[in-house]
Image (cartoon, one colour):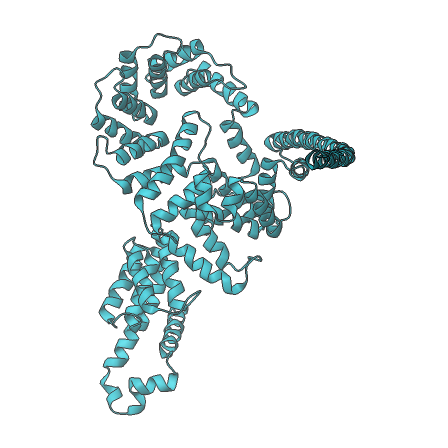
Length: 609
């Protein structure tokens, strides 16, 4: 027999083994495929459910956003035109619903309402929580509220930029840096100047609480919500008040009043909800007023020729009318001449003349002229560059922003007895650098009517605010700062520092500071005792203010008695009558005893006349 080859058999066995393995693998693969298909089908169903849920959630959120936006608009509309408390409460209820739906602007407005106590109970805790939520969502206002000034400023928030500008300007928690202050103030001033040019901003009265009896009219109702609404209507071109003004000016113009003619021209030039814009009518009334020499009428014709409204552009005619009106002292005409010289429109470009007319206009109350002056100082155009002058001018423009309306709401809150709400609003304005707000905040704090702060917090904060107001030139605040150091309110008693503040205040001719300084010289408190200087300052106080006459008279009498006691030789004969013994007998306040004796003698003299 022939031997069988081993190799083919091994190969056959190997092939069989491979076939079995492949078959087994295919069977296993089929099972795995079957399982995978089932798994894929399950995952697909899950993903479909997820996508369906996400789509529903997205649709629901979109619906909420639309509903929230509608509620926010309705709320704003009611607040804009309502006067009654009930309507305002209804508006804030809608605002709350919009905020609950995640509407960002509604949340910002509601947070402000809770913080400042607008039209409802003040709730600072809830306001802070809401501001923190807003900050997480990237809201500039939320960032501002929790003192994220830098981040808010980088994000473009104007209030943050004002706060940061003020802090760099005076060096609060940052090194003093004029250029950094200028950068922040310039951004805000640019925005405000643009609004002013469009007549969208309006100055607001800033009442000093400690002087309100002098600032207010005799009926003590200098401001009310009707006046506030009137301001708002004018700023927003509301129809009711504009119509009243229109008919008043029309009646005056028919009677031959040039101011009525000129302001009718202005109303037709600008146009409003109540008065349809008409260049032809503006030209007619401006001409009528200008022919009678009215400065506003002359300015109006200049504007029409300068801008080519209803007439061809004619810079020569524009310059002529602006120049005549400027000679009559009209600030707007002086400003327009500044613009023409600054831009070289119709005249040779002359920055020095531009500066001259901008300066004249600014002195006559033209706010946009102040902005142009700031720009010229910042760039060194037509004048030596001055960062300090530029910042001060930019600041005055920034303070005309719409946020200054909080001076009204803060004052009304104070008048209504909502002291905490008033303080919060003034405190925000104080952080923005408003000196009046700093003084008012300090005044409220030292009144001890605040409930949101403990007693040991009030005086240190008040001192801080008085000091900031004093640094901005408020002489009354300088005296208050001296008082705090003299009596040890909110700080350790420090006669030396008190004397320094009083000395700074007397440069502003403040009788109270002179009297206090005289007292300190008399008793050697913080400064060397000097009776002659004491007498001099007492006399100056009486000369500066008639109200100081009686206190000065009594102080001088006391001083003369003290001098008499110290000079009388009689006290040398008995030690019990020496000044040192007199202090022991009558205690250190013997001078008060002498004052009482003098007053009694005066009363007796008056009765026996």
